[in-house]
Image 1 (cartoon, protein in one colour):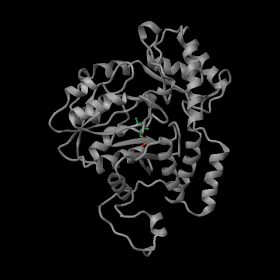
Image 2: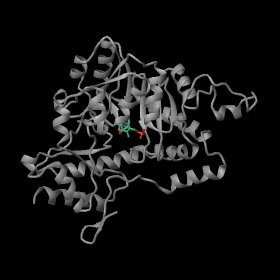
Image 3: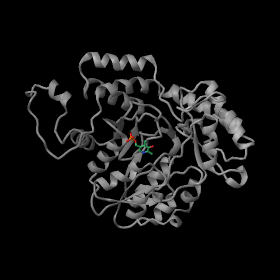
Length: 392
Ligand SMILES: *Cc1c(COP(=O)(O)O)cnc(C)c1O
């Protein structure tokens, strides 16, 4: 970590919010002798379904959101010849899993305010091969659940939500994860709103889908290890029914996740308080502030993104990032749109001009630290730094 006597210790862009409770839970799990997927993973799945509060929801724990997205598209039977609509403004995971199953991601431009998928552009990209849509709830602002459902119904599409930024948050009164979508996938990566270090959870409504995902997350074995030791069938007996993957969540991670789940609302409320502090402090600065939904329930505040115009702010976003670093504050950019990456540009034959909003907004976007373990002093440090950088 760069250290500067004037600015104090460097404030990283993100840091997990881990208390003694998580440390104790993980330690207890290690002492128990059961490290891989077992009772903690099963309890985590059950507690997650209860949290999402849906009647017929099943949760499947996995070792990353990427794994969960892959299992979802696999279980839904998406494959060669199929097209899947993916917003260009996302992490590469969302599109890469479509490739894993041999299908074609079709990149879609985004809404300038939310940076979520633009359903008008998505509509223009429908063909008779379009099989599914994978919306991303960017920064923690959910895609409008009704609009998504209407779009999917109208075009008869499967829906897999990338909810890596969207826990916990509501859309039209319902928690993301409790929608009519075929699958909703959360990430518990180290920088996400709740974390297990690496991990993820898939919500599905169909027991058949859940069963396929449970099988495929563990080598295509038809029952997982925990069940094997619970059942009266001999422990050594199992069937391989498909060439599956190694995507199961270890109990050490699940133990951490259960504690984090219990703290999810409190951590979200802290991020919201930090966001409102920023909004107030930056009101008069020459910068575009993030969209604030009328109902505070409609934002998970995973990211706090500013948009900086070189013209009005007097410096380009890249220079802002350098100056913030000089001030001892880490920032980041979420995301470099997929069509600007060499692989996706080639694979999708994407031209910048096909994504006017994402291409333009990418030049302006920067994310500030907004993690729940920030102290008030950390928040003041960010506010002071942004103020100095933008009013020099
Ligand atoms: C973090 C992230 C992912 C991937 O999550 P992993 O758990 O690291 O696989 C996918 N999509 C988006 C939008 C993300 O931010």
